[in-house]
Every structure is written in C-alpha cells, then in structure tokens.
Amino acid sequence: MPEIARLRIALADVEPRVRRRIEVRLDIRLDDLYLVIQAAMPWQNDHLYSFDVGRGPGWGIPDPAIGDDDPMFRPASKAALADLLGEARGKSFTYNYDFGDDWLHTIKVEAIGKAEAGVVYPRLLAAEGACPPEDCGGAPGYFHLLEALADPEHEDHDEIAEWLGEQFDPATFDEAALRSAVARLAGPKGRGAKKRRAA
Image (cartoon, rainbow, N blue to C red; front, side, top):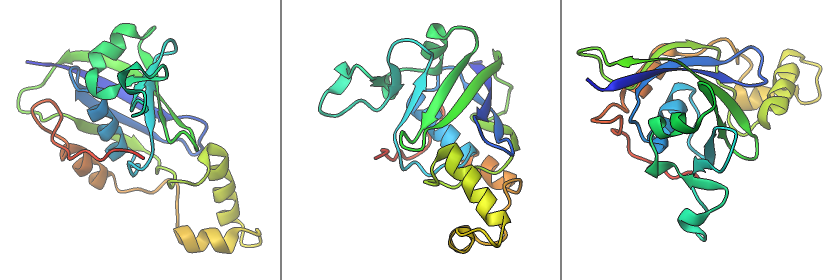
C-alpha cells in the first residue's frame, strides 16, 4: 500500500477563514498537488504558483528562457511531495498562487500513513469557507470587496454586486462539487487530470 499524507490547507489573512483538508499520495508530483489544491479551493489555474519550504528556491514553473537553472524555481514536475517534505523544517510549507495577488496558503502535514483499501486518492475530507474570487487583489482586495458588497452606500457596491451578484456569501460553497472536482484527479499517482499551464 502506498503512503498517504493528510494535509490541512489554510488560506492566510482572510476572514471568514478558508480551510481544506485533503489526502494525497506521498509520491504525488508537485505539479499534480497544485491541481488538487486548485480543485479543492477552487481556483481557476490562470496564474503561476510556487511551493516553498523557507529556504532555497521553491518549486513551480521555471522561466522558459532559463529552464531548469532558474534560480527562483525548481520544476514542480520533477519533484514529489515526499521530496518537498524531506527539505521542510517541521511539518509545514507554503503554497503561493498568483504572484500578483499572492494568495498564500499554509499547508500543514497532519498525518502520514498507509492508504486505505478501496479508497481513491486524492480526496477532499473537509472544507470550510468559500474561496475568494480570482483576481480581486489578494487578501486586501477581498476585504475591500466584502466591505463594499455589505454596504449599499459604498461607492464600489454596484460594480462589485454586478460582478459577483448581490447574494455572494463568503461562508457558502458547494462542498459536494469540490469533492467531485478533487476525485476527478484520481489516477495511478493522482495524475488523472489534463494539465493546463498557468500563464
């Protein structure tokens, strides 16, 4: 039986809080772990990303002009979660999505153990809070968005309400849809998804 990691993902600097708990194979490639997190939040795969352990270059998509010698990023496609954890101090690391908005996620390893018979991985175990909308300006922009949406007199209320809808609720999301999206990524090593390169 392969080894499985249970990960708790917390989106930093956002209220109400947004958290996910997932299980993935320890040998999942980091570019596939990226897809699992995207599906669990859900984000839209439209931006660059990195996994970081606090020292040395992170893992992401190296600059094509530099290739594998990019001093900022090692290729996420050439490392597994087990490799990242081998370099991590303690049992946590960060995931940054969209280098403009800088959505920082703290990922904590809650447990490592054997896979359960008959269970397909990756899987979403629990979810809390709706993911912020893409391209809203990171955590500060999201705070502004919620403030404006809650106040009909706010100068940006009408524009944001038209974009998101008057009924946008940061606590409401479709957990069943998130579970299905994560389950669709299942494969021999969690590689069942068609990849889309972030731009």
